[in-house]
Image (cartoon, rainbow, N blue to C red):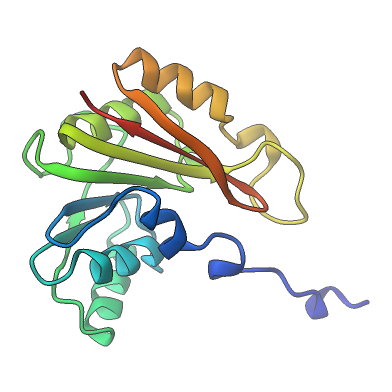
Length: 188
């Protein structure tokens, strides 16, 4: 079989944003931050639909080209409740949003990409208000015919250790698709 004819799953074949977001208790009127949103803004767009016109979703990324793509997608899908924010999540305090402002922070498929995971997690926690939640989904440390190298992936145990040490409580751990795990934490 030719390599170009092998179908690599994408989008909700890999991870169903709506289903995963529903598991967080996301609701109309919430403030959500998709930290490391990427150019597709897959979770950003779905969250914006779910929080409605009274809510807001901040699409945060270090790549300005990704933010431009998210802005275009937001316009295309008629979602005026998406605001883009340029930030380096590996610099504590760099995200220009008020502290303890966000109801739900998302770190979706980014921990394998960053060198300083603890700072990224601290930055996410800084933004979450008391009783707010942090949803993390990332690649399982098992082999797959695609995705990042296994050695670059961050295990759920490592995430739980870091986040637990930063004072958040694990609410649930679940499968986020055949190749991803998800962890939902709450700030007390």
